[in-house]
Amino acid sequence: MVIDLAQLFELQPLLLFFAVLAAGYAVSRLGFRGVHLSAPVGVLVAGMLFGHFGFKAPPMLQEIGFTLFIYSVGLTAGPRFFNILLADGSRYLALTVTVALLAGATALGLGHLWGFSAPSSAGMLAGTLTSSPTLVAAQEALIQSNPDSHTALAQMGSAYALTYLVGLFSILALIRFAPVALRVDLAAEAKMLSRERQFRDDADDLEPAFPPPQLRAFQVERPELAGQAFERLDICRGGRCALQAVKRGGEVFVPSPGDPLEAGDLVALSMPVGMAPLAAERIGREVFDTDLLSDVIDTAEITVTSQDAAGRTLGELSVLARQGCTPVRLVRSHIPIAPRPDIVLEKGDLLTVAGLKHRLDVVVKALGYVERSMVETDLIAFVCGVLLGLWLGALKFRLGEVTVGLGQAGGLLASGLVFGFARSALPSFGRMPQAARWLLSELGLLFFMACVGLKAGEGVVAALRDSGLELLACGVTISAVSLFGGLAFGRFVLRMNPTLLFGAMAGAMTSTPALKVVTQHARSSLPALGYAGAYAFANVLLALLGALIARL
Image 1 (tube, one colour):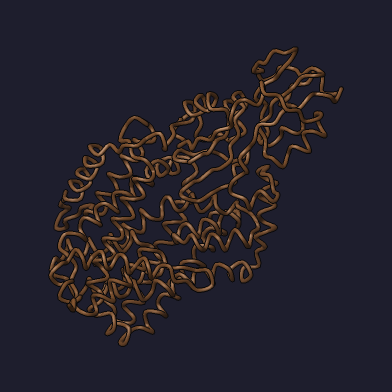
Image 2: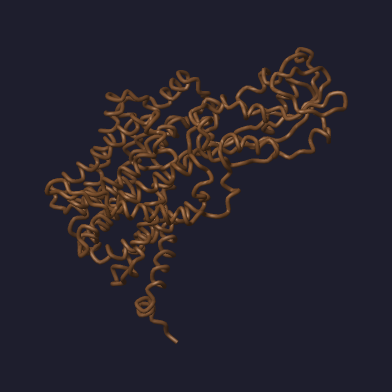
């Protein structure tokens, strides 16, 4: 029996669709010198291959994918978007707007020079900045303004695919070359910033997470420790060593901050395993006492939502010291940051804290909520948010002879931002675990990319033959203009520290691989702070810009 796959795919569109997804994931595993294609781009390439042979996308899946992805982008950015905007976000917002306008104007100008259509220019912009939200919003805006624009949609998808790789590698090369061209020593600037803001500048700056602590017991033998509070000892500086319990005269108790130690006390400390020899040297010999070591150190991943915690440094959070808990990991906008005592927390941060379980419960209540304790998604809130976004997108306003509106992309983004911010302020509202948000966003984007690839595949060979070199040249030019223009604006107008500026440029261009290059060159994790500040705005602004260009 011979199976005709071509006929089978034509008869079973869903089978074709998931074959594209599977092939796309296989393509994304390919890499060159450690740089891999993302899964969405792999799916796009696979879709174009299938589309080249005449296969069609199933109806409605592109619209479903668009809705899920764009709303999820707003939902994810919501907890930090408004807080950054109202606090320290003016410079990051100004930088992101400048980079977006430079990239958009360059894409339009080059498109006019080479005779490309506005949809192709939008595709060039999205591909060069490797920004999936830009492509998604531009495609949907084009469909709304011209439902029969199949050729324009194919041109946009082809331009995105052809400029994606050149955009990725040109941004990596340019951001590595930029410090040399501008005569900036990023490593020296990072050290200077550390001194100015009293950041600790050591090997931990390159390590986004501290080792989980262990519970160890020691006997107080050094005579100079008698009468001193534990938190005043040198060994506890940096917040990585916490006093959990004291055994004195056969009685175990939990000391309050400021309680003095006495000679002969047995103390239970939570600390990284590597600090045990130092503790034995500074305090006294290590002992094994079942009364002190019967508890187990646990960890909790806390999403920061408390208004009292946001805007304060980790070192200022007295609840951590009172409960003897230690921060071991901090993730902001999907970027790990070393949890130093001087790092300022923001709403939406994911902070991993280690300590005794009953004490962790107190810390969680003070800082926010634990994602992993939620196993259900509030689908009513999710669906209502999508409905609100679609309704906002459908609204039109007439200004004289001009009709304006947010469009579906703008409406869904606005609704997602509002619902995401409300979720950070009211943890009981709209329950949605991080894994559920990621799954909906990833599936939505993959569905959309598969459909785009299938449509773009019809003309990709002709586009590569007729204007491939021009598109590649456009990608390099857009990268160079937006990068160096943004660096000049941030350095001479905004007066930003180069360490934060280069990180912010990676965020404004939505390039996580570029952030890795910057942090390695700076030998510090400080650029990640700039990245997180700009990235919160970039996805939203670039999506709106892509939709605007597509309508021109």
